[in-house]
Every structure is written in structure tokens, then in C-alpha cells.
Image 1: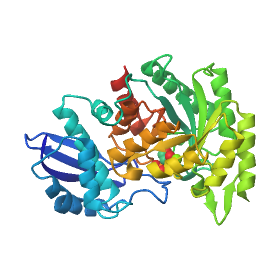
Image 2: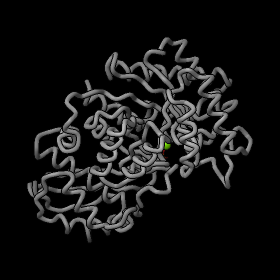
Image 3: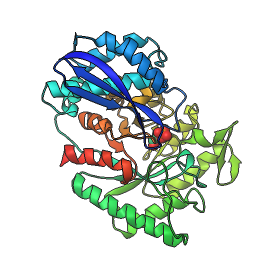
Image 4: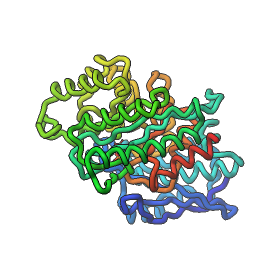
Length: 400
Ligand code: 2PG
Ligand code: MG
């Protein structure tokens, strides 16, 4: 496939913040796009993001000329050109958002040229050992707190992990939608609310009695609706968001790391269905992650801000015993190639991979294609409402 040139549209994400859509044209006049989402609870080591207007200048002046009239054959080749144009670890020169938008659009261009789906092209290049197509667990964020909601919860996300394998993806999503709607009615009744607010990822965002109350509610609802075989519970504490000067702000108190660990211990003891906790401590406190993982070897501690989709960091944290699960967010690292390498290494180390959206999302569903290519353990895609539905729909296109 031969590239003609690359341009960019400034578009808006689900929080109405400006982001970029890279537009790649091949020499036959076909056009391919890639849109970049944005996080709010971001890790300090995430790739540098250029302001969309600067991104437009960089694409026009630097990136497009590098691809002009260029024959490209693989994702790795394209991404190595992008990485070469930047030359910095944190993508400070051309920006992680510029790289990712172009990288995604190029995957679509390659897929079109080969008359394949994006996941097939990604698989052929990075995951050729995967022979079957296994649908991922859906991590669906039904109750929002932390930076994603204006309520009293320190913990950012209360998710159900829906098993899609037994009943198939369509039936699982139908059931999840019904569960989500009923949960909203339950919360209204429980707290006598005339209406219910939702957060950035479409989960319910009301005040609760304390940070455990949403877990208790989900556990009870799963059991009463007889979904124990299909649903477990996952948290994303996103603890850097409620950490300041050595203490965590939790249930109205400032507490230290040891006290927070004890609280998580009781959560695991009180909730049989609680399976995983993402970023339980501030993002540099790897020892605390490890101590929680060691105490609960049958549960999964997940790195996100801790690991920022960086292969070397994932390897270090996994070898240290700090995590047995990891979040993969392409825009934390910058290119599709680096995201796939991170997944590949995680799988080699026996770490469960969960390919994730950002709280500021768009209509671009590439994360689902990457998850399908890799047979990732899970996809983390919010509650089944509003713009979050686009990722559910992409699952349906691939798996049903
Ligand atoms: C997270 C993400 C997505 P954000 O912390 O895992 O849920 O949030 O995109 O705001 O970083
Ligand atoms: Mg997270």
C-alpha cells in the first residue's frame, strides 16, 4: 500500500474536550481515520499529548512529508517511522496522540489493502500463535466515583466482569444492559432519589454510605439475579487520585498505606465475588501493590497508572509479584506496535491483559480490535449507555 499524505481533523471527545482524528490517504484516494481518546486520571509516565492545534502543525510539517509516496507493508514498519520521527521515550517531539492517531489509521489502511479486518492484520503481525477467536470478559463500570464523578466515593470504578463465553456476546450484553438498568432503579429506591446522575463512563454516580457500599450492592444484586456464574466484581481504585502527601483520603479520613491495605483485606474477605483491584495504591508504591497481591494470591491486582502500557515496566512489576493483571491503553504508550508488544510480554509472563477505553472516549472502537487480535483476557469499556455503547457494538461485529 502506498501513502499519499496525512491530515488531521480536530474533533471532540465525550467530555467535549478537543482531540485529534488523523486522516491517512492512500495513492488511490482511499481515506482512513484514527481518533485518540483522553484520560482524566492519568499516570505520570504516560506519553506526552500535544495540544490538537500543535498536533495539526506537526502532522502537516513533519509526519505527512515522512510518509509522502511511501510504500508501507507492516504496522511495525509504520510505527518505527513514527518512533524515529520522535526519538524521545515519552513522545515529547511529535506527541503520543499524533503517533496513535496515525498508527490506528494506518492499521485500517493496511486492513483495507489486504481485504481483512483490523484485528486480523494485527493478529497476523503480532499474535500469530493465537489460532482461535475467544471473546473477552467485559469489564463494565456500573458505579462511578473518584475523578469521574461528583460524588463521595474515593474509588473510581465499580465494575462487573461479565463472562461472554457461555452464552455468547449478544446475550451477555443484553443481560448486562438489563442488569445495569435494574441497578439504577435499585439505587434510586435505596437512597430515595427522584432521579439518578451518571459519571464520565456512564456508571451511576450518586453518594453512597461508604466506599464498600457499592460492592455490597453489586454482590447482592448479582446473587439475587442468579448471575454468580457469569459475573464477578472488579474495582479500579485509581488511588493516585485520592493520595496526597503520604496519605489517602478515604471514607472521610486521611489514612496511611497500611490502613488502606487493611481496608482492602476486609473488602476481599467480605466479598467473595470481588476478583480484582486496579491501582489500589499511589502509582509509585509498587511494594504496596506486591504486599496486597501476596496476601490475596487467588485475586488479581491490576496495574494501570503503575505500568502505563510500558513493556519494561509491566515486566518489572510482574516479576516483582506486584501484579497479575494489567491494563492496556494504547494512548498511554503511543503506537499500536508498542501496545501489542506490551500485551505479548504480559501474556508470556502469565499476566492477564485488559484492553481499556479512556474516560474521555470517542466513536473509535480500535481497542476492541486489538483485544480480539490478542485474545486479551478482558476489555474495559464502561457501562452500556451513551457513547460507551460503540465499544459494545464493535464486540458484536466481531463475535456474533
Ligand atoms: C482508568 C481510566 C479508564 P482515565 O483509570 O482506568 O477507566 O480512566 O481514562 O480517566 O485514566
Ligand atoms: Mg485505571
